[in-house]
Every structure is written in C-alpha cells, then in structure tokens.
Image (cartoon, rainbow, N blue to C red; front, side):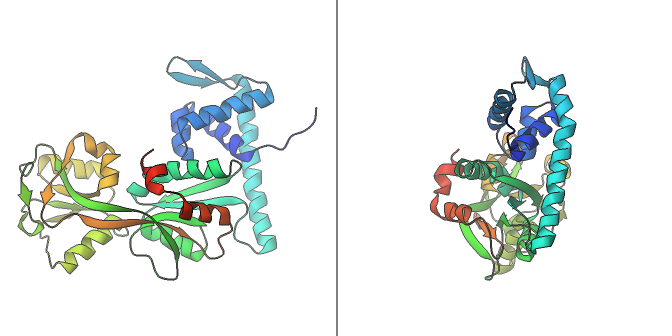
Length: 301
C-alpha cells in the first residue's frame, strides 16, 4: 500500500475526540464547529477504511480501533512539536508552518472559531495553536513575537500592525429583577455596586478611560475580576450592575437572565482588532482579513 502523508490537524481532531468522547467538546477545544469535527472524522474513516466513532443516540463513543490510534496520535503531535521547535532553533525563525494565534477578551473568544473556520476555508491544510488570555497579554505576546497574530481590543500602539475587524460597544447590564429595569439612569447617580473586571481586560481599560475622561466617580465599585459566579451573586443579592460588551452579552449566558440598563452616558465604543507580529509569515491570511466583510461573514454566522 502506498504511504500517505498524514494531515496533522486531522490527527489532532481525532486525538481530541478520543480524549473527550464528544464532538461538541472537541470542537470547543479546537475552536471549530462540531459539524467540522464530524466531517473530519468521517474523512479519516474513509481514508483509513476504519470505523472510528459510533453514534449512540445523542452522544458518540470512540471505537477500540480509535483508542488504539489515540496513543500514536498523541506521540505524532508531540514529535511534530519537538520537530518544529528544533527547526526554529536551526533556522533562527520564530515558529514553523503552524499559525500561533491569541484571543483576548470574552467577546473576541466568541468569534475565534468563526474566524478560524474562515481561515480554513481559504487554507484547508492550515494548522494552528490558540492561546487565550486578556487583551493586554495577547498584545504583549504578539508584539514580542511569541504569537503570530491575535484578536484583541483596547489601545493598540502605533508600531503594532493592526486591522479593525468591527466596532463593539460596552453597556451596563443587571439582573432582570433589578429596581432600575425599565428606567433611565446616569452613571454618576447610581447608588448600587458596579462590578469591575480584572486589570488587563479591554472592557476594564475602556470603562476606566471613559470614566476618567468624563470625570465620573464610581464610589461603590467591586473588584470581581474574571469571577462570573461572584458577579452573578452580587447582581442577584445586592443589586450590583456590570459592564459588558454588547456582542459578548448577546452570545453569552448573561443574556438569559440579564437585561440592558438604559444609561444617558453609555454606550462606550470598543474597537476589535486583528493584530500581527513583525514579518508575519501568513501573507495570504493577512490579505484575507483586509478583504472580507467581517460583519457579513463572521458576525452574522
């Protein structure tokens, strides 16, 4: 039988499916859609003439053949990483053919899988690694060359190559039983606690910059960081409010029980950028970002 070169991304998909026994969880870990995972598994089954996954009602179960291949798949992926690292040391370049992309901020994480699907439609053989953190850390990693590119919001230094993807807004949200629901308020007149996210968060940065420019003081603010459970508790027991980007709100669990509070001072504009490091090697992707209509292709999907 003639040997074939393995598609490492498909091997990575198989590895995740074997780890999780779930198309949905594997898709979430790889920032692609469950249908894409299913198609890749089916293509591997056709290529290898093996059954890798069995459907059991609304769930799946990997076969014994898949489990046997899972250990080999993990070894292949590890060897590939070691090969790429050694190659990087030998040729003096940062990275290999794997796109290293970072996602900063909750709103940008939501669109990452859609962006990667768009990339894969353009370059089906593309391999990638995704790092998630706040926007400040992703910006630092791209600027230092640790990452190839990233989706971030916040203030971008002039020397960093950036492309505006879309314009979001930050608004004020509260639990649907809050006393302010249905009325109109001003930030300076709110006596309820207001939750603030962690330092380095783009939402926190834009809120603090806005408050400073407008000379608005929030005497009753709570430092809640990334702790959604604490925020939810404060909002439900102490009538606290929170700042969220509108796109994130509409696509998150907050939209089920929380509502927008009408505020004379808001919304706060927050731009979302695609940034790239110096000597970004994926010129075709960079050109693609500049040419696509992001609102139509990504946000509307």
